[in-house]
Image 1 (cartoon, one colour):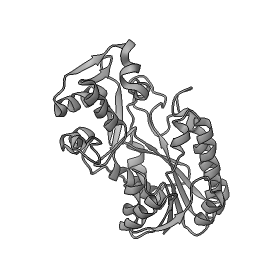
Image 2 (cartoon, helix red, strand yellow):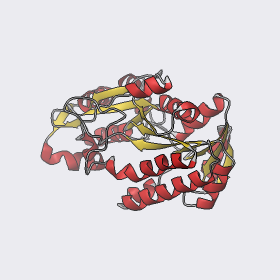
Image 3 (cartoon, one colour):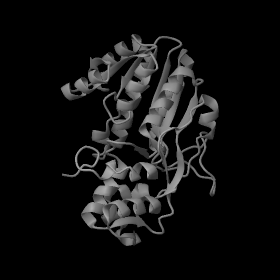
Image 4 (cartoon, one colour):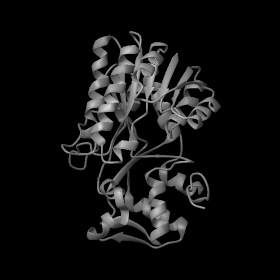
Length: 309
C-alpha cells in the first residue's frame, strides 16, 4: 500500500516508517522542518513538507495514499496549557485526512491508555471507556472523529498507546524519572508504589500500527500493551539500582514538588489488557519488557537516550 504517516520523524513514527517499508509498503512522511525531513528520508520514505495545521497538505497527501497512520499531535500547545486547542487541531487534521483518503482506505490514529475506567482490580480492556474527568476522556473527540469516517467508506481504527513506549533513544516518562532520580539523589515512588503502568516496546507498537492499517476491521480499538501493569515501585527500584541511589517512598505532600508534571501520571493505577487486540490482529510482542530493557543499560548511558552529559 501507499501509506502517508504524520509524525513520521517522532519517537513512535521513526519506528513505524521502517516497519511499514520492511513489510513492502511505500511510505510518505510529513515533515515540518529540515531536520525532520532529513530523518524521514534517511528511513527510506518520501517527504511531504508541512505540519498538521496545513489541512490542504494533509488532504492532498491522503488523496495520494491507500492508508494513513496519524501520529502527530500539537504537544507544544498542549504542554503550554492549551490542551483543548491541541485536541481541536487534531480533530481538524483527522477530518482533512479522511476527506482526502480514497474510499476503502484505512486510517489509524494514536491515542492514550492511562485514565481508562477500571473495574475494581480488573484490567481495562479494549472496550473500556475513559474515566470521567480523566486524562483519556480529553482525547475522546479525535477518537470520535476517526470512527465517524467509517460512514464515508473508510476503515478507521485507534491504537491506544501505553504511557511508556520504551526502547533505545526514548526521551519520555522513564527517561524523565531517571533525570529526576539523578538530580534528587533518590529514586522515588509515590505512596506504596503499587500503581501500575502498562508498557510496550516502540518496535512492538510500530508493528501494531502496521497490522491496524493492513487488516483491522473498521471501528477497531486496539491496545499497544505488552506488560499489562508494572508497579511504579519496581521501576523506581530498577532505576535506583542502575544509578546506585537510594529507593524510597515520597510522602504524599511532597509528590507534586518531587515529580513535577509526572506526579499526576504516577498516581494512576492503570493495568490494561491487550487480549482482544492480539486475538483480532495476531499481534504478539517480541521485544524486551520494560524492566529487561532498563537492565540493558542504554537508558543510563551518556548522550542520546541517556540525556545527560
